Image 1 (cartoon, one colour):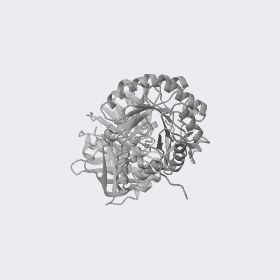
Image 2 (cartoon, helix red, strand yellow):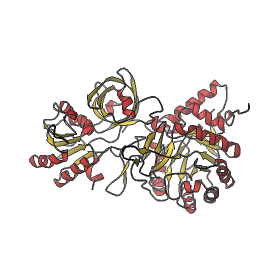
Image 3 (cartoon, helix red, strand yellow):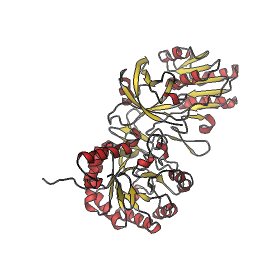
Image 4 (cartoon, chains in turn blue, green):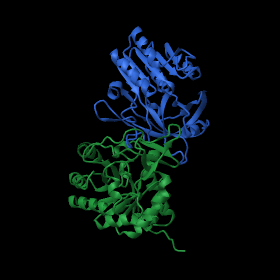
Length: 255
Length: 302
């Protein structure tokens, strides 16, 4: 898949939740190639501190308008600097990188935990199927700004929070068994913390439902050169999260 | 203007890519015309495939980064059958960085990989991230020399010894590999470093320690290149934190005949060609005809 580097203009940048920002960019030339599940590698500043790019998943892409949306959590110095970027300024973006989700589902179940919900926005929009069921997990109700985003694109929404302040108390994995029992699905797409992905993949396997998971890792190059992000696959070989993933078939990376 | 000949390896520009930072080359072909790169030094290659170190492998540090990849690579056979044919599509010298667990393995690798399409070898006697081999050969002059001798016995291709900065006296190491027959010397590999997570009190890197690279190491690299270039007759390839054409100029003035771009590739995939272009502009602006006019010209007289 072709990749490019663009100087993308910041069109809008706002805080949408605690420590979570939505960044909209004009990224003509890049956005037309972007598929759900892929990511961009962002230079947060033109200085040598911080030095490395930050991999951020694509939360939406509008090819006609040339706009790209990123939703990211402020987790350290790099994303703190990124959060200060104002509309009108430009950001150096490399991408689209990685392999996206396979868009072959008639009855999809989407499962996202925390910031892992970001790539599922673009996925849900691209699936062109109905109904779409999504399970969203977060720490508490303050993190459930995701409901505003997903309510127009997903017909069935289930919510879990760690503290029970919204939806059901617990983790996404706790409700998936019931959901998989109550309805028939032909694909599970999951993105979020690794224990969640492992749990979702295990339940999908038990039900014989195909499952794709999106992994994340620290990356330097983003193009398969530095091998910072490789992981062990079930065939005994190694996979690069950046270029073989970040989306994998669950059985490729989980036992 | 930019062409150089390093120990018989003819390059269009003196700007190479450093091992481990550019994959095998094709990974970057969407962003950079590989035909415009001085030479590609491919990822460290071992006799058998290696899976590398467990746990977190990189950590960003001020103006730099630590890595502990641990020489993950598909092995020499896979390189020959899968990778080298792809590189044949490009008009660029391919230098293989080789790493062995024993002195004999370096010789076996050189013999096996001395094939059409390979321009030379860079001996990795300086990897800080593996238990055997690697840096163990790069910190003892006699061991480094024996690796060079063994490789020279097994190939007629140019042999470049890559030195570790993790030694007290880099000049002793340089002289040892030159005397053993190295055709060129590249330096520096990464500086051994560490980072600790103050929340968990655990080392950030899975291997506890790792190699520091990036702009943070440039002054150390430059000093070592200057020391070595004065002390040896073979060409020196300078590397360590080069981000811009002016950084490259500094290394040339210090005595390097060519330079290699490492960590900068991660930030700007086009760094190797951008820097070559910038170097050309610099030569023009100074009224110089060739890159050789810069080499070793630092003037430290009062």
